[in-house]
Image (cartoon, rainbow over all chains, first blue to last red; front, side, top):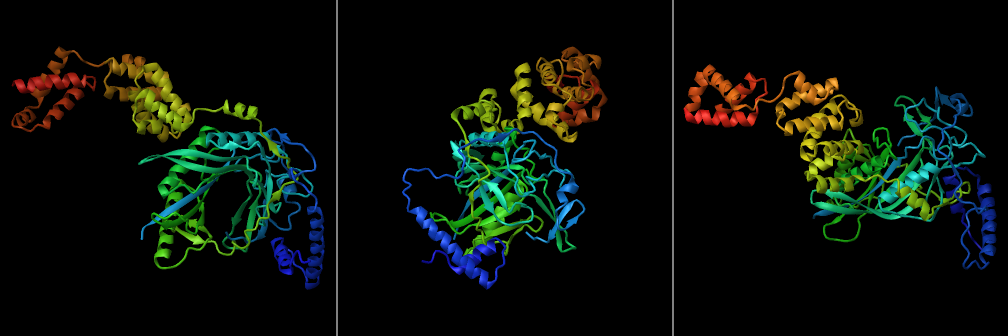
Length: 96
Length: 477
């Protein structure tokens, strides 16, 4: 049973900016198909009257107070940047 | 064919918290690039966001001010897209369960008051800032703004003209500033607006295809951009074409909108609930606690000023433009009981000096009580309105009170008829030629004689008495 097409895999890969070979695309399509088939197994469970759950814990309202804490040194903030220019991160030009 | 525009607006307002929405970095504007960042707002792997309580409270304030229903439970979602100013690769926002929904706000238009629907108010984080260098192939990214708290206020497509759009924006702006939850600075981006606009043949119901306008950083530019875009769409339709659904950027210098082709592809944000943030649950007690902190809002204050003080709508509008200004007015009236006179002085001399010296009303050297005392001196005839202008200037410069200045400089008004009579005689004798012309029918010279009497008394003569005496004297001869 086909749950996902190769085109859909290519589309999702593009949204995630991932480049795959033909082999990979075929393999991932099959694997994702298996995963989605398993979802059908879960879907068979009767969940009438059960609220959807987005978290594994039942907590709500986890707040912090509005207090300023020390930030990183600019050097530390930029330490992992592949490219920088002075205090800025440098990236290929984005035009908007 | 005549077209009717249909406009909906999305406003992003930065909240005036000290720290960011999910971390303790400062939100102060204008710091050195990338100096207000930490692993959380930089989007390092493995970090956990922790929600700033104040963000929720400020957002609740706005939601209540625009009569929204606050959802008992709301939650955060991830909006996924790639852009260099978004280090995590997703923006934390609210999607299917926003903080508040279904409100409205009234705006005053020339033709009367109109109600604009509010679809929703939700909380989200701001993105960073990219700078573009014309000369190189690079952009430069500053992440200080990343994680600054925002509320997004989405209107219903209820506006039918650019003027209504601008009026609605001014309304939201003044409410946010009155609530002291946003500084409203459009140039620094604390208050931003996107517009959805379409047109349809006059009298029809179905919405046309809309475009989304971005990059308008003033009320005026929003209005100009809407005007341009409505006309552009009308021309497309009149030429037999179809409007393309797209995002267009307003170019303030050229006064046109440009298509943003290219960046458009895949507006597929794949929202899903953020597993790092637990739901917000808001009780009725919490809502009531927030409501209790509410100041009187600008439109209610305006209506009350008109009702209570019997001043024109225009005056009420000016006096309620800022909370502190309205307070100054009310305090002055409390002391002198003359609303219209107080309003005239505040709107005239005071606001002129406030503007000239670029200071805030709460910092001016004349207190409401001092202004009220000066107004009382005019009312009881001690000084003329003209002399009061000079007295006020001296009050502003020296901080001395009006009565002291009047006594010190001997500015008490001359109302004594005998004294003024002799001044008038001197003036007439000194200007025989003008007197002759006046008698031969040159009526405007009456004003000249009044002026001469005022000059001779250094402005201290009571103008009304002078008028009466002069009339008598000139008709007698």
